[in-house]
Every structure is written in C-alpha cells, then in structure tokens.
Image (cartoon, rainbow, N blue to C red; front, side, top):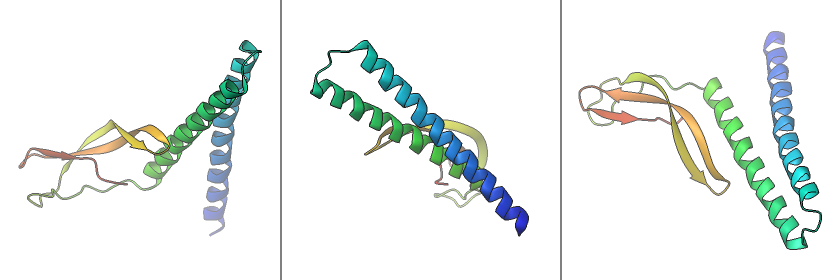
Amino acid sequence: MHADEEKQGERQEERCGAMEDIAEAILDEVSAWSQAHPRATWDELEQEVLQARQQFGERLMQRLVEEREAVQPVPGPRCPQCGQEMRYKGRKPRYVASSIGETQLKRGHYYCSRCKTSVFPPG
C-alpha cells in the first residue's frame, strides 16, 4: 500500500506543477498585455482579466479531462444498436462546449462494422 500512496503523491505533485505552469503562462500573457497597454482603462483591464480567467478554466479543464482519460480508459463498448463489441479506432479530437468555454478532448473512438456506427464513450 505504501507504493500506491507514493504514486498518488507523485501524481499530485505533477498535477500541481501542471496547474502552476498553466497559471504562470496566463499571468505572463496578462502582464505582457498590461505593459503593452499602459493607458488601459478599468474596463479594458477587467476585460483582459476576465479573458485570462476564461483561458485558465479552459486549459485546466483540458488538463483534468486528459488526466482522467489516462487513468480511466474505457473498455471496448457494445454497439447501442446491435450489441456487438465495437472496435477501437484510435483517439480522435472532439470539441465540447461548456460554461467554461470550448475544450478539445482526444477521446477513444469506437466503430461497429455491422451497423456502421461510431461512438465516443464517456470515460
């Protein structure tokens, strides 16, 4: 059990490091914008900060979804129409819109040769 706790601690450190990298990159972008616009109004500053918040949320969501997919891969699902096990066709990009913004996901893509249908199961 000690090895599991150690792995979990390493994953937590990696997760925190990745989130810090995201925040630092966005902070650098906002700081560069602020320096390039020294006479920006309050409204313009606020708009830039809101955009940065949006970008942070989108990037964080992307990171968390990728992390979950790596930890919880989906086994070959059954076709919803005929019940045959579907064949894995690789990872394909999908875009999901949410209240945070649009996030690109690379999800497992499965295909049923009998019904000629495809699915991107949740994971």
